[in-house]
Each structure stands twice: as C-alpha cells, then as structure tokens.
Length: 148
Image 1 (cartoon, rainbow, N blue to C red):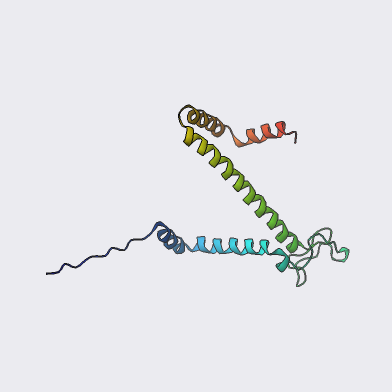
Image 2 (tube, one colour; image 1 turned 180 degrees about the horizontal axis):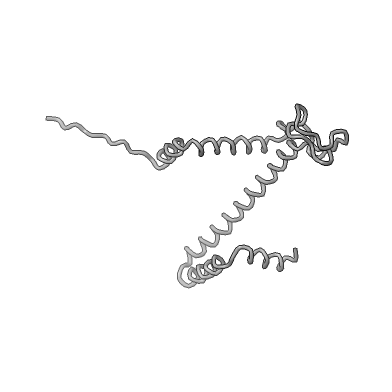
C-alpha cells in the first residue's frame, strides 16, 4: 500500500504578517491615508494648484472654496500648496535623520561586534548612560554645546 503524503501549509513570516495586517481594517485604512499623503507630498508640483510662496493680497484669509481648497493664510498664500510643499520637507528631514541613525548605529554595532571584549563593554556602558538620561536633559545639553 502506498502512503498518502500529507502536505502542510507552510507560510513565510512575510505572508503571516500580510495576512494579519489585512485583517486589521484600521491599520489598512491608516496605511492607505499615509501612502496617499506621501505620494501627494512627493509629487507636490503636480497636485498643488498655486505656488506656495506667492502672495495674493486680494485673497487674504479666505475660507475654503473651489479655488483654494483649504483657504488662504494672512498673506493670501494657498494653504493646500504650502501643506504639500511642507510635507516634502518633513519627509526629507525624517528620511535623513533615519539614515543618519542607521549609519551611526550600524557603525558602532560593527565596531562592538568585530572587536568585542573591552571595547564592546565600553560601548555598552556608554549606551546605558545615554539611555538613563531623560531626553529633555540631552536636548538642553546639546543646545548649550552648539550655542543655539
């Protein structure tokens, strides 16, 4: 007699993540909203109807209407255009700070992992000291050091 071979469904961790993520409706909707905002910020020149820095003294503080989707500010600048272009700056700052963190963290981690021993212990004690300080104290110390 031949034996029947039982095939188990094996899923990769990515497939499990996607399956669980798609079940959470709020996470899916939130992710779609963020993706739309990021795309609109990246392609701001396409979506923006006005130059964000151009003033229009005839349209100061107008409420939202068909021409100015979110209205205008105190100088008559289109708020929607300024929001899109400001989003580009925010995304650039976020990506740049993340890349700097990765660069510093990976470099220190490689040094600690490669040399190990005493150097690894010194790096870990420095990290423990940094973790024990409150964030506001670090910000104050950095502002004193850089005279800002």
